Image (cartoon, rainbow, N blue to C red; front, side, top):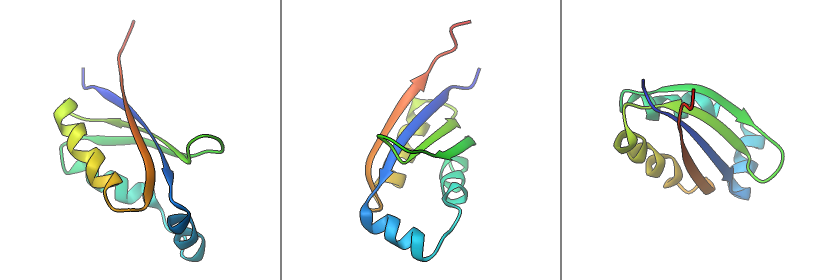
Length: 90
C-alpha cells in the first residue's frame, strides 16, 4: 500500500492579500510538487480555524514526502506547515 499523508498549513497575511487580489487554484501548484516525486494529491481543502488548508497526499515513501514539504513551505507564502503520516489500521 502506498503511504498517505495529511498536511495542514496556514498562509501568511501577505499571501492571502495576493490570493484575494489575484485568485488562483493553489491545488494545481501543490499537485505539481507531489507529482515530481511520483506521488498524487487526493484533496486540497480550505478551512476555517487553526489552519487555512488541509491536504491529503500519497507518496512513494516518507523520504519523497519529506522532499515536498520544504519545497512548499520554503517559498515564504506559508506561515506553518505540518505533515502527519497516516496509517491504515484495518
